[in-house]
Image (cartoon, rainbow, N blue to C red):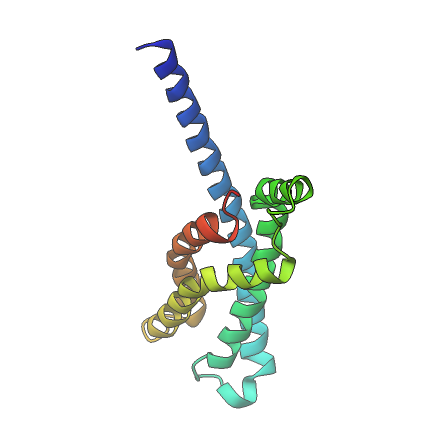
Amino acid sequence: MSAASGWQARALHTVAGLTRFRYLKFGLVGASGTVVNIAVLYLCHEYLFQSIEGPQGKPWASLAVAIAVATANNFTWNRLWTWADRVQAQREASVVSEDVRAPHLGVQLLKYALASWFGIALQYALTLWLAHLMHYMLANVIAIVIASVSNFLANDRWTFRKS
């Protein structure tokens, strides 16, 4: 093994480690989003929308509100922590060059929401389907875990991609 290939192998190993660390951060943010999601789902299903859903009804409206609030929570923390280095690099690049502009918060939120759409749709559909087989709260947690992988990949490669 030459010195160049050894250096390249170490560099690739470091990049892979950073990617894993970023996914760990994404997972921790996702865990906080899960807590937010479950809390909002419970409050809406048991109190806010009780009259339209009933105690045995499907949590249609409650689930939609819970997903929206959790998505806003996750976007905020992912932007401030998980991909903070890329957001900062985009800001610095926009100061140096007028051709490269850091995305405005609203544009980035829209990209985050679009990138997460498949995961959100998957979570929503899986929760409703699994709720026929188990308690709606457990069904929701299982659906969140499954959807998290697609959310990470889409947001890492599009919303917060390297400039």
